[in-house]
Image: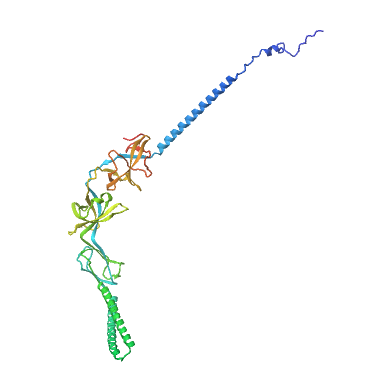
Length: 416
């Protein structure tokens, strides 16, 4: 009997059992040294640091670009133009209000009805001319009663005086008592006072009766008549009967800017022109000033008297008042839209180049003439200054601005 193993009938002839030689022939991996492991970790850390630094730089650059774009977008856009030199100043022209030398409303001083009026508007009258007559029947009756009361008071006073004299003569002989004598003397004094009171009342009513006739208070022109025949008239300022103005001399009032307040003196001759008299000049005299600067307008009120005996000039007109002034040096003309009114004073905005770009610079100025469209700057500007034409209300000193030339787009850089 043999000891060799029998073959497995289910095993194919090609399949052979694995031998120990097959396991022993597999390749073996070499162990990683600690130095190589540390080197690998270092490489990975370096790559991570580089990637993180690149991300930070990219984010920082994006923030810088965003901040720059935001600042450029926030900077206000302004239009600038150079200050235009003005003509040398040897005079300045101001508007003046023409008024009558004397201007008075005429009111009634008594109640009644208008009987007649004698002068209408535009009529020249002399002082004392009769303007109107008022009928006052009630006042006439009051005066008659007061005169009768006065006569009664005079009679009583005379009787009391006689009685007092009689008793004073009899008291020395003890024919009458001293008490009765003192009574009649006191009665004589009181009736004498009653006479004075009645006389004052009569005089008062006569004064009121004298106002039945309305007279012109001065030489002038009737410029208004507000009553007519038969109209009820009430005393006081309720109804203006007439209005009168004296036109022989006219007053012209104007406000001189504080800058020129020291150049105007009393007695100086002033030239005046009027739109209704083209090419003609009238001469007036500066007669008085307010001697105080108005704190609201910063101007000095002056009065100029102008002769008007021929009646060419009319009160209420607008005059152009020409003042001579010392030479103020070079002046510049700017649009009134460029003026900035703040509590610090009158300013204009200019632009200047700086390291950070174009910035705004606020300049304090003093203006001369102002015609409503343009203003004359006599102090504060220099040749070549670029003036902001229509500055925003929020403009501040040193603020970065974007300059736009008239008729062009935004200027990314400085200005010419």
